[in-house]
Image (cartoon, rainbow, N blue to C red; front, side, top):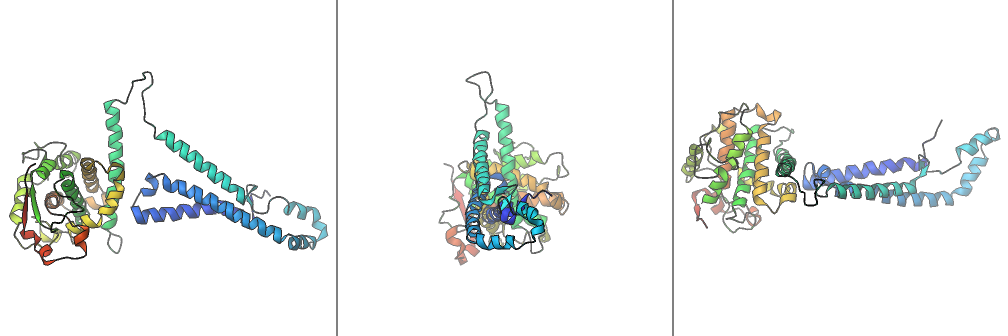
Length: 382
């Protein structure tokens, strides 16, 4: 029989599995879904830590073996002399090995793998060029394709963050909670892209209503209120086009009703953190949209870190995540299409025009915050 490991040799792959699990759990807890898979440093950390563990533990065990050598020799000599040859073979070679490589030298394997991983990662991230011309560059179509792939990858991470936030104690997700939560994120990112209110550092009262021409342009692209005529690059235009041809098509709400419903809802006794909704009350989300946008903000920031300087790009990605939420099989059949779309459009519009929660206000809710729905701000065009 071929002995491929002996003694503590199995610690070599064991350390790799242990640190991979540890780093995976830590990155999930801190940064959210898919972070481990989408970033290189966690995997590099696993290789380095496993290599160090093999080196340190291997040296310590080797020293212990030397100290115990006389006792071990006595034990070997006390064995039946009839099997002297077999005993010599059994106890020859390294005592703690995997594939005849001592545990401490498995550190070289791990460190070598780390170096290769870094080199391969560096080469993989070099800009692509078209061979044959020193001035060649990616075609516009190729750049757009790579851009779309990046947007979809980040949008999936954003969607996963929101889905995780919406799980109940049984691990289930209600469609009304997931759609409203994702719409709240899109609404807040729309306000941030407009750039008229510093979402994280403002001194306004969270919950105040805001009318902004810039927000309206981001939502529809222009002054048009006919959904069929608005810009394909706007938030509502993107959702319209991405869901066209699906079972949700022809169930979109009228934009005029969405905007008028929000304006007409100001001054009515909605609770703080909500938006005026025209759908039946049983379809209203239990989680407050304004609070959901704040509670998921840190993890959403981590998900979009690679494009963080571009607020308009982040809005585009979050809008794509909104579309992906509609296509989730576990959610798609829970709500009537018209109800789902109305909930989404009204929540996006409402949160995009509501002063967001800030770090300063989160721990000290005031009476003014509870009555903020009665107050209206007007953001004048710049």
